[in-house]
Amino acid sequence: MRTVTLKNVSKTFYDKSRKLTPVLAIKDFNLRIEDGEAVVLLGPSGCGKTTLLRLIAGLEQPDTGDIFYNDIPLDAVAVGDRGIGMVFQNYVLIPHWESRKTVGFFLRLRDREEEVPAHVKTVANITGVDIERLMGRFPRSLSGGEKQRVSIARAFARDLELLLFDEPFANLDAKFRGQARVELKRLIQEFNVTLVYVTHDQVEAMSIADRIVVLNAGRIVQSGTYTDLHDDPDSLFVAEFLGTPTMNSFWGRVQDGEWDGSYMGKAPLPSARPNGAEIIVGVRPEHIQLGDAQTGIPATIDRAIPYYAEKFLLLEVWLRKRRWRVQVALGEDHKPGDTVYCSLDWSRAFFFDAQSGARIR
View (cartoon, rainbow, N blue to C red):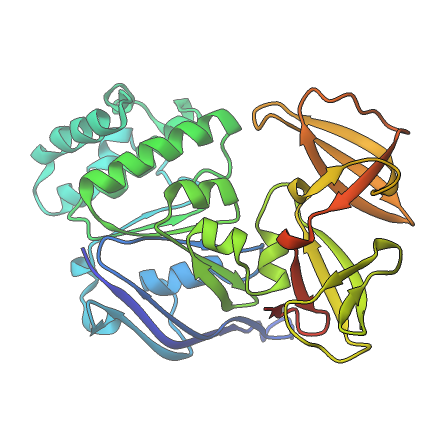
């Protein structure tokens, strides 16, 4: 295993031939990943996740800052001694190589090809999947899931210390993604390697990570467990990015020490803010209850969407030209056009500064 440390790392991409505006991918980035830790880099497209992974792998060089493996500068570690296994979204299998040759490439270069069957068998035993039957086949005869299994087996069939995954299951169907996450978790636990995993999928992140690092515009905005991030976000960005269905956000101003959302009513603030300050309140769909006309805010149902696996019904409702999301029990009788009366649980609400997006505590 190994630690990975990034200190004040920045990376900008230039395209002088087309005179495009430079793209700042990573800015003053600091992160330490401990021995054996599974860290997931989570964020929207374009936030710098893949660039960061490539920097850690040594496939890109930072413009400024330093990267260390076990506190040794990355440049001082020979490529052959870095112990990296990397799995890509698009598999990266050589078309004219059968799977056995692909999986055994690292060992064959070191005259250890006789170890390949044992490695393949180990991976098959841990995952519970018979990948040995794929070893004599070429990429053109493999499904997407089979290609990714071969790619993962290749990553583990080496002297592995650091495992890097770049959205490896993004091209696979939902059923296989779920199964593949379980297989991967078993492999990580058995081989006890350090893992850095890039994804924009929250379910993937929470099922694999010891720690989730949320990125936006090339910076870390918050890190922790999924529960920490979901239940205690530091910013409006994190609160809106995590959680399915998406959080509701309501704009208002401070009036006489309270948040005033006009037709939404008033709510006590966690800390004092000046009158007139703009505040956004976030309320998750599961924290809105349906009540009666005397206590609730009237809204019209636009859509009722059943989530059968999760066992809830999501109501999208309209109120004053605003769309809300309300989560109720599956099986409740609601249909488009119905009027419902919504009551917000202010004790579970989040308050954010409308200008900076910072959490008000």
